[in-house]
Image (cartoon, rainbow, N blue to C red; front, side):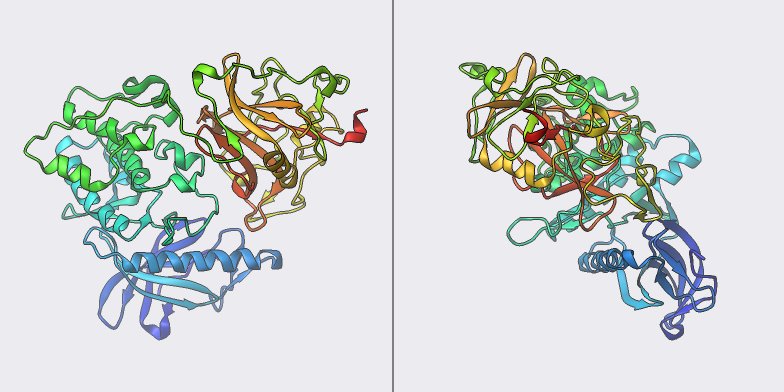
Amino acid sequence: MQHLQSNTTLQGGKYRIERVLGQGGFGNTYVGYNTEFEETVAIKEFFMKGVTERDETTSVVSVSNADNVQQFEEQREKFKKEARRLRKLKNEHIVKVHDLFEENGTAYYVMDYIDGESLAEKMKKTGQPFTEAEVRGILSQILEALKEVHQNEIWHLDLKPGNIMVDKQGNAYLIDFGASKQIRANGSMTTSTALCYTPGYAPNEQIGQMYDRFGPWTDIYALGATIYNLLTNKKPPMAIDIEEDEEEAFDFSNSISEEMRKLVVWMMQPKRKARPQNVGVILEKMNSSNTNVQAPPMVVNNSKEPVLPTPLSFESEETLLAGVPQGPKQSQMSNMDEKGVHAVDLGLSVLWADCNVGGTTDAPTGELYGWGDATGLKTSQDVNDYLDYKGGLYLSTPKDISGTKYDIASQKWGEKWKMPNRKQWEELITKCQWKKVKQGHIEGYRVWGPNDNTIFLPFTGIRFDKNVSNTYSGYYWTSELAQDDNTCAYYFYFDAETWNDNVNTRNYVYSGRAVRPVCDKEDHV
């Protein structure tokens, strides 16, 4: 039994379940009744589909596999944290939380019931976009809600038409803070756990899981995508499409005013610093007597790049090739193997390949693979389609797939090649010198080992479904599954501005990333 039955009572009869309102992977939402105040409420219950089960007689929730107990407890705490975040927010366009408690072996929180439907449901029902006047009315209300959210140093991180409700009086409400994250006093995120997001509504910093770049502008991008969807009834363009096609990536009808078009384009700038930096800026533009919103020019690639932190050094675009070796010295190579790949001795514990899996020395970028998917064919965003992950747990996949049947390097290049683990990546990061270079038309980093031998790591981009974005960044898998989240694996990230120096960032196994193999020194003489 996945959900509570009608007329089930909670808290000694204070709340009564009337019907199921919605079900998801991490919980059930019910229409309930507060018997003390005689009013209808919404009740959200924490329930992990595929991980938990319910006793039909007692309604008690339990974890079906003992290995998942810790995961369940951690996620339940996150569920309770979501309720506490909502409780802090005081705005008429944000659903108010009234109660939080544990019962039946799980957690519940009680909130206002909205007699209405989401914007996504409404548009699906009519099959038509909203009018510009309707969108303006909704936008002004959601901006006020976001202003309150951001003032509490919370980012929503999943803003889309499905997470905005409208009641029968036309009042709009921002809902579902399950993906939201709070910022500590020192400016860091309260968690580094990989975040879910909806393609088309997530900017580059969210796609790349670059937590230190999150801010009000991250939600503003999603709000711009939401406005676009409401105005056109079309999917928002992907960030990579906006980077390449600029304003031509948008398909507005002639009925939409130039002012509204510019507003959407401004909010969906690929570069976060080119977007409105807070909702106050947008409200000021909308409320000013001069209603013409002047979006700044589309910013895609800046010619002036910031300096990277030590130990990375940086050369400007004009001097990228000056004095930089373009390949490994003959003395540093082993014999070329049957795949045409050289193993490069950088003076480290292992040898590094001179190109990515799926590539060659002349075209080192290679292919993008889901973690553990040696076929390179899967593009689903359902973790249950990968490896042997079923119902919330891996049945047999090891925490480190190096050299196993799930190892992309071993399966593609032979058993002597392996995916590098986090320790091997950290050795490459901390013991080598890095410099941004351009090899032919491909940008990336030249990496010098302690013995002055080098390899080139290109920017690769990242793939979700069939869409590749962030092609000015490098995303490389490690061989290790995340320790506290069986849906994610650790990876190494870098671009022209920042890098991940401890390989403790993780993301979903279905995201397509590059693989740069290593091999043991004894396998190459």
